[in-house]
Image 1 (cartoon, rainbow, N blue to C red):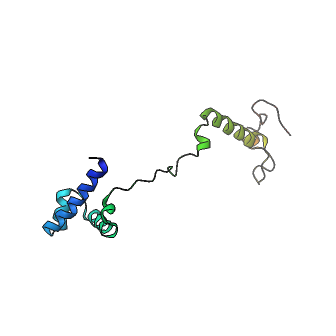
Image 2 (image 1 turned 90 degrees about the horizontal axis):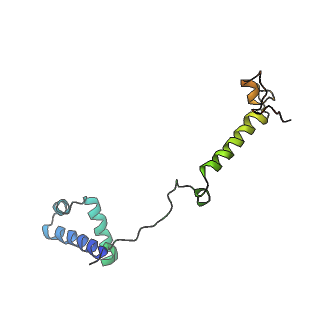
Image 3 (image 1 turned 120 degrees about the vertical axis):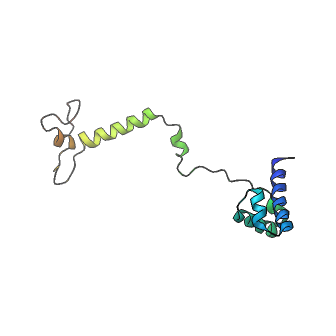
Length: 124
């Protein structure tokens, strides 16, 4: 007997037991299932017949928060290198507008006595 057959038989037995006892609560207590699940299965049984009690195949999809396949093979070192280059550009090379920076790079604001790039070479 396969697992699918075993599950089908169990579900059928619970429905039959509820009919014998004329008490759904008692049948569900004996089977260890909630009444809401019983009524859901009975509804499927009435609507679809014997196939309604058979387990349905579950959809196997990707988790919504899983990274896209293109990013799964990217190494952490590569991501860190890209992040470092962006932060270097944003803080040491790109001139920012605004009343605090007034066309300066953020490194000039925090390190006014030093040159604005870590290697000492300023780009225009």
